[in-house]
Image (cartoon, rainbow over all chains, first blue to last red; front, side, top):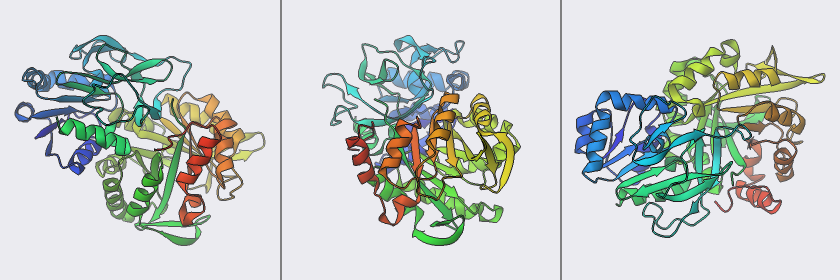
Length: 197
Length: 253
């Protein structure tokens, strides 16, 4: 069972729909005990980094950390990926998981923001498990105003006013800045890779 | 590289895609869910479904159409037409849409933009502006292009951004339905006045018009309805022509 964590920040219907389409068993839940029982966790995210404070206040954070320590696969999408870092300029007082170093920063003022649309993946190396079978240069759909810096764990970068992390992964931890549930066949293939872990 | 988006718009009445001129002579153009899936398969970057009847009693039909369509597609999906309240927007998101497009209701009560953006995020809120040339300026019209609002389109686009809109869907009323090309002057003025993406709409007749609106109009995306129906231009042909002309597009998809 994949737990799709509902922290009351926007719309989770698309993520569930895509995973259901792939034949995965899913549950959308805001109940920490359901998250604790899951064998995979997906943390979607649209909207503001501040919305993740709900995770900290509700017991969901502990359930997620516990799952990560049990080494079950965890996928953060968009703000869900950003929350894997310690913090974001968007809401400096809210603490992320600090699984990776660095801070999420806003796009500079000389480009349009949010970064909306289909942009290409520059895949690093050939060992990414999340991007297995994905062609370098494949397009995926982004919509965000803040970005994760390039990290040692970055397995694909994207270019918009400089490079930023499109995919990060290490062991059982995965994060994608784009929306795989909205990225057509490429996105579905990436979600399938996650389901198959 | 961030690509220019091609957005297919489906005008829907009573659960069917329709196409006509100035809301007259409506012709049945098919099932929304099937057409949306076909457009997505052909390379559309997004789908917009516009409820052109937008009456209260037809809301249940619309939501069922949204639900059926959303099940078929895995690309961004916007719904507009008759969205008046946060509850209207919430019902549309619940049915599977990713963004709502608001027009008349936002002009009547601009705080609606902020209200939806705070609950669902700015990326989920498109403010649609129907602009009509008035001497050297452009005026925003409401109610499906029937009522002048008195608002300057350029100032209104900036206000919409300030209030939390994530994108502007800009329709040239002077070009809409003519097939003579997008209004590049209007599009460029608005695109340069805001920091959020601008979707150009109204007037698409052929691939050359898309090249123009991306090059001269500084559009971030372009939307069309009728040219993609009835097989006048397929999205895959359009994208291959844009690609050949050096416009960055998602091609092959």
